[in-house]
Image 1 (cartoon, helix red, strand yellow):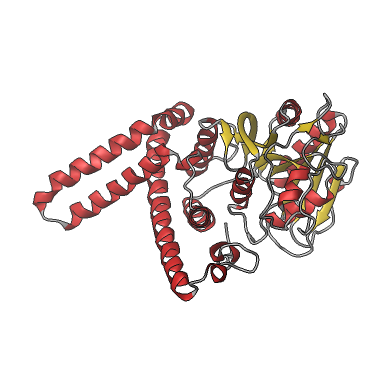
Image 2 (image 1 turned 90 degrees about the vertical axis):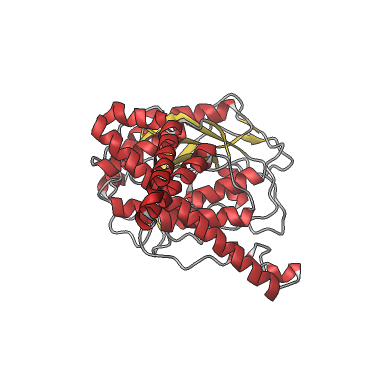
Length: 411
């Protein structure tokens, strides 16, 4: 399972690429001058070693069955695969079933968030590949084999992530909707990607360390994986979404937790990333369908509010707008609604349309509000800091990226 990096620089035993000697190495160290362009990895006909990295804050709950599945995959591999569990915080006594060969258990000492936890695990891992798996995600039986084979066959591949299956463990309308939406979004966007997903995502360990790992300013589960994927893509790294790499999600969602998580820990920080990068990616849930769906969802909301406030003479026009927007929303998302209908019947499909509309309403409004905030802050900074050098932090990063908002408990 020896791996050779055939790029311009060759360093350690994991095939680590050469970087500027003035840049501090290791996960968590942000890089601004890394390039993956032209980099190739030669596995000499063998599958690279793989370390499954699973952060957790508890030894019980969804973690135990998901970690036990990882142990099954470690045993089935017959070598070359390990499990690295990192407890985010001061861990209690390690369960006896984790005290075995092929398993490394570490702790962060204090609660630092999944970004820091994964970075620590990456430093301790031995594999040429890192497979990040959430503590509420159960890998499919062939997931590890598919990932190792994909990297062995493609010397240009930097990272790869998979998809939830269409049989989520959590019951309940919101949980089923949420997990099926995630499944459909990933299955519908197979191929080259400009982002990453740490729920079930693999990356070459050397390159993960070289680019600085996850940004540790994210103290709660958020968009740290998306941000890492954007850095990899900007550096020329090839990321692939392979929906045949499957996993099962055990997370339970309520309506409140869905809305809160999407606004506070997803839409708001992701919009800030888009504002800082000055680029709106055409991928996953913000492709043209997602954008048009957002416009239609907000259009329905505006038409409904207008109908309640304007004179009766305006009702027909408001009704036409509302129906037209609903028709377009259903038409461009028909594949997803058919999936919902096939899985759980008519009542669930109707509920999914309503939840999908709500999802697009609050996500679109959050996007608009944050973009206005960022534009306003940009104008304030331009007047307060007219010189180019004063508009950046000491690290060279734009101030919007270098000074994140305070962490919010939850999500």
